[in-house]
Length: 193
Image (tube, rainbow, N blue to C red; front, side, top):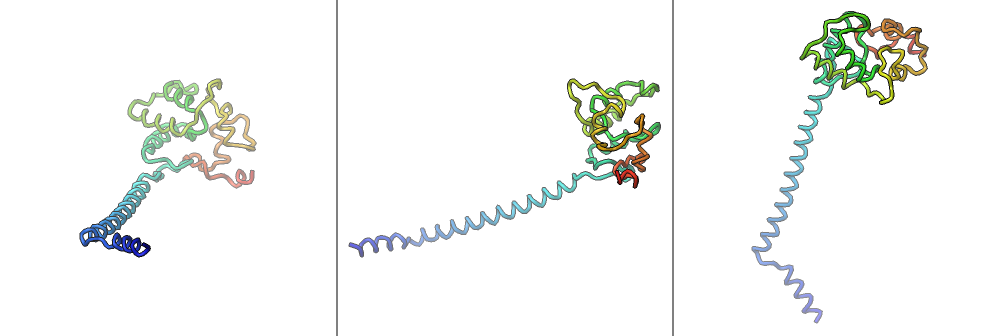
């Protein structure tokens, strides 16, 4: 009886030639499929990597900034700096909430000076830049129009003994490259604080 069972198992393992060919064929197809999936994954990884590098944020040579700005916002940043730095140092959007920037862009009365308002499309580009890189405002919070009233400005300067009154022109004392829109570089005195 044991021999009969062994024979049946041996007979099962002995497949007809066409079944053996199918089995070999399916193994080679599986191996081929794995190779195709591997090649596809590598190709997609390379494409994704090159696409990510192509869209990675870069600085424009004309504007040195607080942070790296993606290409789609660079023209808005340049227009912002160009328009605002003619009268004063252009501030990074992060020091004031989005609502402040919105109100400043819409109001031709700018801190006591009548300005020619920006018109579209430059206004839209500047707004996209400012709204993307500024911060939200709490519902109960009053919209700040001065640096001294901005909780973001205070949060970005922890432990800094700020001059009284805080004025845009005083930024240069700690940020010597502020006129070039570079607030990352600090004066030696500010670095010690």
